[in-house]
Image (cartoon, one colour):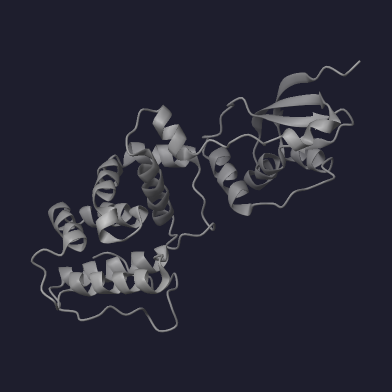
Length: 269
């Protein structure tokens, strides 16, 4: 007769997490950004019981929960978790095999609009607020962090709407358009709307304006590579915006010698 799994809720301490991780003989690759995100939720009180479980097989081996337990250790705090013991050893290939719900999916369930773009813009906005300027995995916001950010920065929804309307005509990624609108509108809403609309259509833009220089650079990037690098595109739009705000002319936009770094990445003015 197969063993019937047992289920209980346990307050998992860092010490207990260490003992349980020692029972994981086949560690998969650790994703540090995932662990760090879980740990931030745990330390800020955003971690909740959502029905997901830690799983141990009939031999007592941990088969699901490595990242969550690692986060408990990083956060150095205790959190409640649902623990299932006695799972058949042969089911490992079915664990986490379903389609993972994205943050855009969660936003749709919450009744939001423009969910794919809103998720992308919210993610970049949280990353920006944490000092991350490149679109890499160094900072990976959690859904709880992004929801909290949306609650305190509702204007992100307007920026996402702007990105949906303009992104295809600017030839820029929607996340870049939305993030730039959100950053620029904080300085001057009307000017932000005008600036991004001119990138999209070029109407009435002199040939020596920063907007024209930006449009030309983006077209060259698309023609040469077919895809715009998001980090470079974000920097170029900010360079053009700052030059526009200073009333300067530009025939071209240049990146810093040696490339972009966290220290020389432009800030909207």
